[in-house]
Image (cartoon, rainbow over all chains, first blue to last red; front, side, top):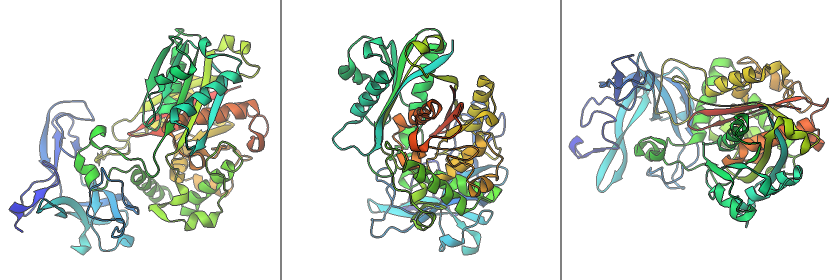
Amino acid sequence: MSIADQVPIAEGLFTWPSNDPRLIGSKCNNCGVVTFPAQNSCPACSGFDTEPIELARRGTLWTYTIQCFLPNRPPYDGPETAETFQPFAVGYVELPDQTRVQTRIKTDDITKLKVGMELELVVEKYIERDGKDVVAYFFQPVDEL
Amino acid sequence: MDVAIVGIGIHPFGRTQGVTGLEQGVAAARMALDDCGLEWPDMQFAYGGTGAAEKPDTMVSKLGLTGLQFINVTNGCATGGSALQSAYMAIKSGMFDIGVAVGFDKHPRGAFTVDPEGSGLGKWYGDIGMALTPQFFGMKIQRYMHEFDISEETLARVAVKNFKNGSMNENAWRREAFGFDEVMQSPMVCAPLRKYMFCSPAEGGCAMILCRADKAKQYTKNPVYLKAAVVKTRNFGSFEVFSQNQALQRADSPTVQASRAAFEMAGLGPEDINVAQLQDTESGAEVMHMSENGFCKDGEQEEWLANGWTEIDGRLPVNTDGGCIANGEPIGASGLRQVYEIALQLRGGAGKRQVPDEPKVGYTHVYGAPGLSGVTILSR
């Protein structure tokens, strides 16, 4: 399936279609605070002058947890059943001088996650819907890339 | 005008089949009225809290259509605490002499189900599995353990203590005292937090009658005075539940802000508190809330728990009724339950779990999504 046939899980979260996708945040032109996802007002200074920016691809793991039970549906809409569910990792990745982004973490080994480790953005298939791949953003340990 | 609590009432927490949330609130309100010899028509106002059950103001069809001012309150996990805060302000302002704060809930089993869009988040956030409160609790304590060297053993000790206290509370949901090994070996829920370290959404009701302090002795021999009641929301930079991103700059949590303001309002400090109820949605929260409320420094919890200083006979008993861990969390009633327990302790009526040496000053703290805290300070 070509990139053009893949649909993003939400519009405006990351640049798509792209071979080098980036998360899209916003930066306040008054106080410089960066938020994700992009928003048209600033939570720090209450200003209304923000502009979209592409966020850094690499960052460090600030904290994380392992989700060990199948989340309630809705709002969860992942591909697993109770039988196929495997624990997954969620965390905050600190992007230098920008912000900390909440993300699912894609890893081959959830036991190796450590605060401070380096991760990089990947945009990959999350689930298939209506015959199309729905892609979402994840961060993945750099040593697994 | 100072504010007193003259009557307290509770409907047992947990699961009560065949009894609606509203009926549990009505039972608690009747018990609170009986406690101070008053009747529903004596109430000038009511603030009623619920998150998932019937609309609180419909209680009047069971308690009496007296025409009183009845306002419904919903404020996340701090719903019950916010109903109390509202009642406090109603009397403090001089507008009313006497009224009731009541809260109840009846949540379905399992983790809270969140509507991301209703919380100002994208649908995608829930779709990919991030709209879960237990994840936040796991991530917050994970970072805290990393920064301040808190061990998993300390998390387990909090749970063991709260289950032990709950086993002495006839209104608690979980009355089985789990051992340390059982807690440490229970299944992982959201690492590093395990099943027996978490509270669960539940059912229950709680109510209190508040009045002008100068009239309190008309209704009861042993009023409890509300020296402070504060609700604060998050400042930019604090780490809160359901944050799609977090600022690089750090700010004090709403708990720190509410605690400081409450101590200032009461003219007291942490060293004056004899018994405390601190929000323990899971054991990590109780650990962090010990320092956020000013009772110890970050990292000292390790020593506090190892030495049993938060046990009922310790230097600062915490969650003497078993907290959320043993009572579950019906969000409409939960913050009121904390105040109920402190009132009971200050009156000397807590039975097997009574804090020794006649405690004079108590403290309650509730925390709720998406980042608000309610603190009260109470004295005899």
